[in-house]
Length: 450
Image (cartoon, helix red, strand yellow):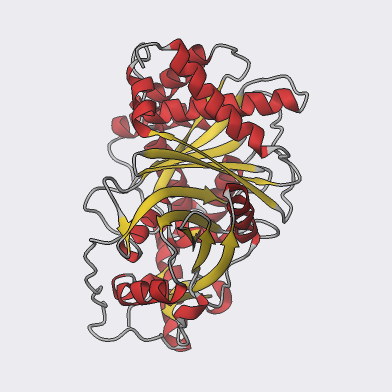
């Protein structure tokens, strides 16, 4: 029986969940009408056949000599995953409910997802979907949202590789497969993955340049570099996507939507620093880059990153946007995200210890202060159980010594900024959310054609 094991990347992400750091991402879908939890269960249940991972749980390999494996959960109960989340009267109460759910750890003994159904005023309902990050990055999570919740999607059952119903492997099978995996991993380290000497030298120079740009420590210590506690705070800001695109088009030399996103986050951080009595200065942000290929496999996590300087000490928002756009163009032209991905993978083939050391350094607050992700959502008019989707928001968990995380998603003609932070480190998170809006207004005023 084939064993489905966590990839190295997924296993690294799973290992990040420790102490007070949770391991999940969150999608909040607000739909029209008062939706019933029982109706949602009936809507979701037949779709699970197309998403077998949502019925699997993780099992550690014997002796932990290999990454954990996915096995079918023998006592799967949908009632434990689609739950009544109570009521939230207004936007602030929904943010507090989302923060409370971000504090709650997903049960490792069960499939790693939940949907909480929260009744809202004005005849609306919030569906709060949490997925463990080890089973879904941003692109994979959006695919799950489409298949699990949105109307109009095809839901063909996934064919099992053993030609029959999914069964849990025996402990002996798990041990045998773990030994095979370990032997293959050891053999991988001794192989030469290079090409001709001249070609290897060229790639080596290119990779070293990418490592210097992305992983060199710069700037002052991050004000977000504090130990993470158990409490979370959440805030959302939402804007018309067409306006964001217009700001990018009207910028000299053209800027992308993500350049505008990073500039807006810079404006929010600048306002927060001023409020806390700190002088605005350059902060570096980690920007995830999806490496999923069109028509490729369905890996849970397949991304890399680039690191971008946010010039918070620059008072002019247009100059900030131009500087950010120039830097992201340089990173993309040099394919830094691909080079870093190859670098980490090559280290893993040579030595697990070297790989862990590189990953630890890449997560250092000396390399970046916070993570800002941006994932395109589904386009067009969308419905769930026949009810129009009104809003889509996203949140991602903070990391140790990175007390703020910004996650951005687009859908229903809007772009939503979801901010999640350690409540004791980032007080007045609303100042960052308000500062994002103020930055976009300032850009619109400075670029009249927008």
